[in-house]
Each structure stands twice: as structure tokens, then as C-alpha cells.
Image 1 (cartoon, rainbow, N blue to C red):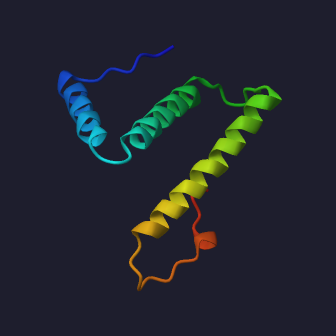
Image 2: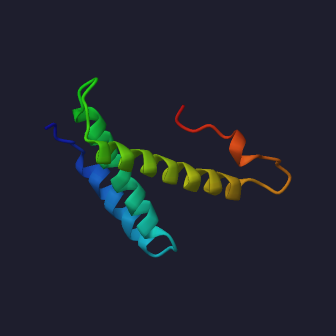
Image 3: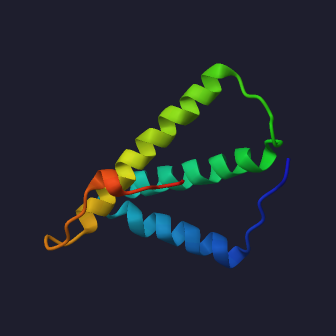
Amino acid sequence: MKEIIITEKQLEDLVNNLKENHQSGSYMAKQQLFTIALTAYKMWEEMEDGEQLEDWMESKIAQSEQSIISVVKAFIYGEMTDGDNLNLDDLVIGK
């Protein structure tokens, strides 16, 4: 298993960002997104091409993908100005 190495400055910045976000409304969501991204990337790195996962694992990954895509689409839509016409079904993420 590979180790992820970060500099002291990167660690300090990460801790400071988490502390700052703790005072705002969605610090837990941001922390959870970081954990999801980091652990998913780690698993992706470790998987061999063509490696077979158990059916329940593949199902959970597919469900998670759809859940994250739904949240991202809603978040992006919420960031849009009222003048923009955007159909969420037209957004393609990860393809």
C-alpha cells in the first residue's frame, strides 16, 4: 500500500482550512467530501486493471456515484445566477 506524503505546510493549510470551515455552516460536508475523495482515489490506485470486486461492492460504488452526482448537480445549479438557463439533466459529470 502506498503512503500519501504531504509537506508540513500542506498539513498546516489543511488543518487551518478545517478549523475555518468548522465555524461555517457545512464544515462537516466539506470534511466528508475530502475523506470520500481521498479514500476513493486510494482504492482506485490500489485496484488492478480488470480486478473483480464483489457484487455488493460494485453496487455500493454505483449508488455512491449517483448520490454524489445528484448533490453536485444541485450544488452547481444553486451557484448559477437566475439569468442562466440550465437543465440539470444536460450536465454530464464523470463521463
